[in-house]
Length: 254
Image (cartoon, rainbow, N blue to C red):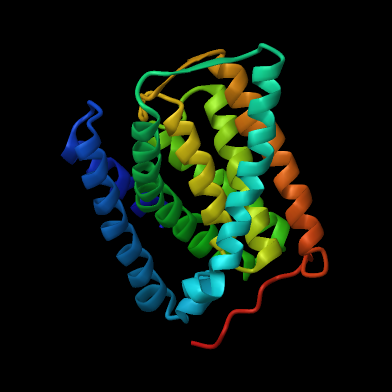
């Protein structure tokens, strides 16, 4: 499955080329979901011969509260982090364009991040791979295992080639794996993933609507350390009665 994920992401990148274009971003987002989701379906039904339910993606009707929880868990502490960085003078942010354009770009990025990163990556790594590992290993080992695979994936597709990017991928995946273990599905992770990646792209070169002085500090403090730590404290508290890091997940009958 990890090899299949790498192949999907590299194929989409090769098809669309290396230079960034918003139209190509949109096409790539759709293609990624169109290729990645069937990959998981085929692997689950034909190779594993196990029910879809084990992947932790119930209907949105069942999972919307956890989706929102994941988003809020990142957005609220990140907002505090932004205020802190701006208030202490560590960061300066100016708008390149109109406020209306900022909101339009933000709305578009929510959709593109969901399709290109959040849904396919959570389904593959926290859904399929972590679930399969969790039926053979204690929950904590399954969470660590998928984080290692996700970091390797980031390296192979060219998204994490520096030490700091590799560390970010591992910590991010470990946190999302913990969300999966605590909540029992991947909706909270999807929400967290969408919030984090959308804002990171909005304030970066992809969004191209803000000029940021001190972007490294903003990324480490406001987008990383504060929301990552606070979100886990919140989720661990809310789901403390469901957490058992030593448990091995039962696999439904074929």
